[in-house]
Amino acid sequence: MNQPVTRASVYAFYTDALQRGRNTAENLQAATSERFNTLLESITEATPRTALDLGYGAGTYTIALARAGFDVVAVDQIPCDPLLRRLDGAGDWAHRIEPRQCLAEDFTIDENFGVLVAKDVLHYLARPSVEALLTSAVAHARGENYHYLEVFTAITRRSADGQLLRIEGEASYSPESFRRRIQRIYQGWDLTLLWSKHAEQDSRTGLNCFEAIRATVIAANQAA
Ligand SMILES: C[S@@+](CC[C@H](N)C(=O)[O-])C[C@H]1O[C@@H](n2cnc3c(N)ncnc32)[C@H](O)[C@@H]1O
Image (cartoon, rainbow, N blue to C red; front, side):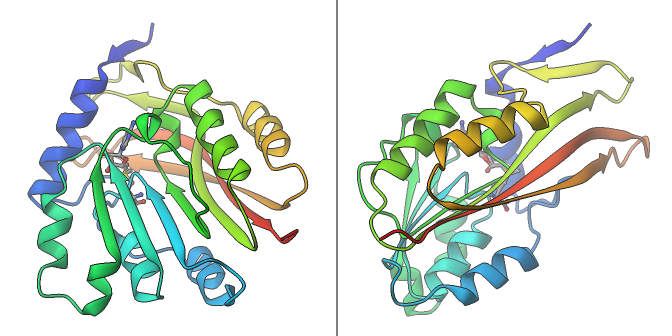
């Protein structure tokens, strides 16, 4: 049977890892992906220079967006000080970043963000929250907007002693249920959906502690 993991322990895990600048099995300190870099380089002046990064973690995607000239609202459940420390003494672009300590599901999207990034975070939310967030981002999109999402589906988690784990309230999408919802939410947008297998190892046991199919969504609103 799946053992429940509380949301409080997910909060404690990320707060500790990010306060200490610790890397984790998921590679929290990783650079931005090639797919994201290619997307960012392709964005023209037709896209509003505002961005939202949901679940920014160490802030790597937030920083890439700010360096590219976007004013970024960076949302994460963890305290803002690890990101603020990272920005301290950085270039002028650092002033374009507004960190907010807030649950993604409590963040109201009521403005037009030219770029929305949500990488490796939406699977933690309940399905209605994921869908409400994306739906309101789509409803407020004006001009050439881009959404870059990486979302884990078909997740299997195991404790060090091999017990199956699940996080309370998490979306638990199958690839098919996720694909259907994304196609419905992004009707009229150019949609690219890519799938890849993903696994993370427990450094103590060498065994897989997390396996999933990662969906990468690149949605472009060219309608303007
Ligand atoms: C796997 S990390 C991803 C960090 C970053 N997006 C990246 O890919 O480098 C997940 C992040 O999501 C945050 N998170 C998880 N659930 C959240 C929620 N409900 N609301 C806001 N942030 C959340 C965690 O605190 C953590 O910083």
